[in-house]
Length: 424
Picture 1 (cartoon, rainbow, N blue to C red):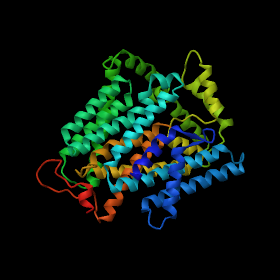
Picture 2: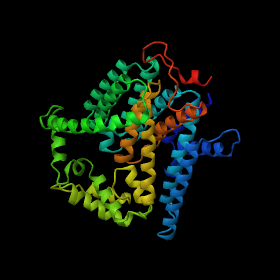
Picture 3: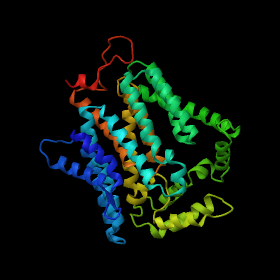
Picture 4: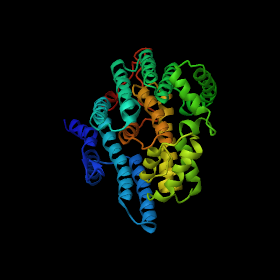
């Protein structure tokens, strides 16, 4: 029952602001949980969590020093500090909870989806939030909840999981969420590869995925480009794609211009970054985003003012935001995280265990979020990485070299040992 209460506070607590909106109940509960773990003799951190905490402490020391010798410590310094500490806090709690029972993932995701829904119902105050709630917050937790439920209910049945990916892809296309739709197709393809291979070496699976993935990506890009130009996915999506692709800077300049501007900004100060005080530099890059990159005949002055008032350099990317704030160390931190979770992904792909499909579903979304989305969304990122750390901990505790042991009762994918059976 205690974990249910904490889950409710972690998810719905984000709707209850504290300190004039600088924090919320969810963050406070997470930090208290982390503090209790650190001081309690009966609750121990695993090696990955210790390394993660040490890296984040170094990053926070860098930004505090940068701000202190520059423009002075501000509220933004505290916000960035708490943001990264909260990520660690979520990971520590979720890892411990999921390690006890991985099916708790379903409970947490259901609460998360409900809290996201309520946040839109009570706080939607922009045209984008009202028109695209699915893309902005609901698609991730709802999709993961549906997928995870099917995983545990069917013991990772290949056909049903691929069918779920197809259905989710159709839903995402209906709501004009192209990235999510493409991700669903890719996940379905990965699940087909996963289920068609018997247990194999992780490095061999990684080589196979990288080689075949490069070829499929090239062919898929050409196919998608042709389909969009022919209006296969509808006139609205086709016209939007053509507008973005015709940009002077290519598809990235048309669909992710903030990312392009963020890269240019990072190249100006690649070693030390900008710290949290970016207001003076932000204006220059906002104007570059609107006038130079977007190439629009008219300028939405409300958009310009809102971006300038935010005081942050445009980037639309977690890894670029970290590069701007922490310098080269922020960039390296997220590169290491990407390599770390990619290792879990290849391990899951090489072993047909019960939890492998969930790892395969989560990891591509996490990597996409780190590279191309702002944030990251703390709950979704922490959920994914916390889940991975949980099973890494179980793997070490049982002395396993790869993934949970497979129990071959018959040839069915579902005939495998559960985590509870492994830890008895």
